Image (tube, rainbow, N blue to C red; front, top):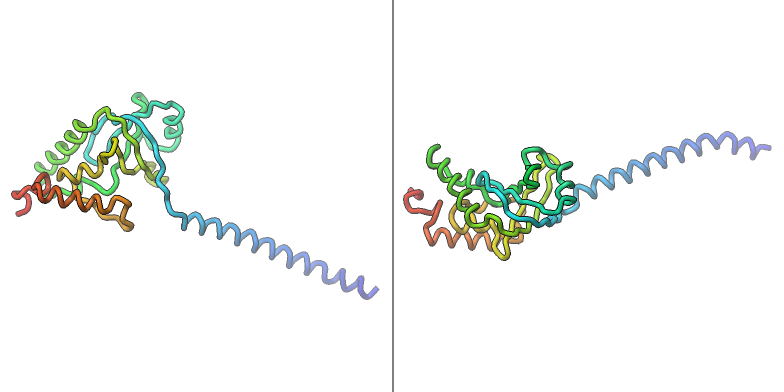
Length: 199
């Protein structure tokens, strides 16, 4: 009888303790999941298409022929990153920026950015490209490295003096290529490296 009484008295405590343990277990699992999500390294994804328009010096528009693939992006990207009639998506070029590379006065800066975009479009328009991209859920943008065959558009901008290589917190796999491209442009004195711009 005494044993039954003890069990009855301790039962609520045991159930209460189990409830706390379960709650803590759930909380710990959620915390671990959030920690894992933050610590996962971002692996760039790939897409392919045809280079369409180059409307500015910071990005390119890639036409995707696969309607299903394109439809996937219509739910994710902002309107400024989509062209529905043309079935194009905008790719913001990583590690380069003609806009942030030039500071020679408003008029020259505007000309320089337009010229960089024009030359990029003239060189790569309508070529098949593959894109290694990261998607930002904050800005609803795709940023990445764009390749046409063995040529990288990002590296091309640096090699031809249209942009400096913009260093990021973590150097990309193409870090050495970017440094070599910048040295090549400097030796050739093209674009940003013209002697009259170095004064």
